[in-house]
Image (cartoon, rainbow, N blue to C red; front, side, top):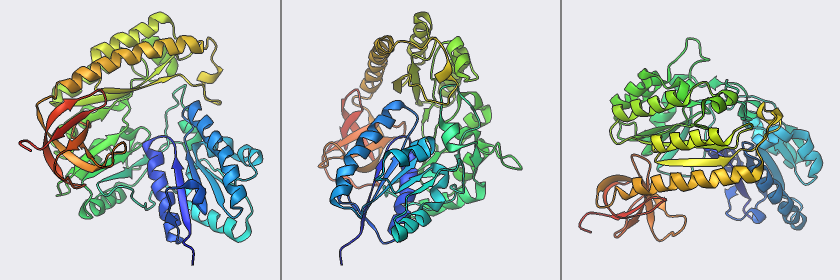
Length: 438
């Protein structure tokens, strides 16, 4: 009997990576085994991201490629899931006749039933409600070391550039007892790192009755008597309370890293973005965090070329970046998303000008990153071994508590092992090291 196979192609954020683990769990329950080759899959899933236009283009390019795969294997089931599926819905099914299922992120709980329906009748299904029962689903973990744990879905903020509330719905928080149960099971099962997920993770619990503070959840998780690392992504700067900073300092499992999206460093741009804070308030938060947590690394997201951004306003972003000294940054050219407030704004910045600004920002931030990493040369750091390097499977990689990637050299390292490593070389992208004296 020929083994049935599946493959999931994932685009986008950590939430999408977790959703892929849920899709995988459903398919494995149905008797399918994962294959690394999409063209060999009996069920091929595209798990999509709609945050930037580039992701749309990549998806539609791969869908065109999949036409040939399905022509060679007519029984192949092709499912397009995630945020682009929610955004484009029926129009996607109409445009690509070889797609069998179009399913939004709010319909993930019905994914298995939809696939069964297609297998039984081969009738295309479009299932794109805005929200659903997707918060307490089990997953097929792709890592044996680190586990994603969603604490909420959706977003109750309407930043002018962001499509997330339109494709993932409003904020919906999980019950704290369900989160705690899942975390306990994961650490009891040997996972060494837990990463809490939410679109604005520190707004967790605002929709619950009674309300639950994210800082309280952190403390509850910290009460689990196990040795593990705890991270969370991504918090909203305005909602970063003193109580949360205190919880980070007092819960030993919380790692010395925070991803804090800036988006822009000019007050007028931030106001048009509807971010709810000023550059000065952001810088103060960065200072408060670093004062409270020694050795804290801070990473960020920055959008260049938001509608109406002047050269002077961009320079304000450059100044803030030089002041904040981020350990890493994800820097993007503004990408208009249909349906968002920003897409309707006048004074769209010419693409060529956006790219000139972006390259300048990247050059400055890369210089900061290189200097920050260079400071680790000769130091000994604690590393959680994650697994083989994607670029060189003969070597293992791990991550420091402050979220720096370390390529490990020398004797054999085992995934899940916590080791102390002396840093022998530093690079823009990370560190390289070996056991002291090794």
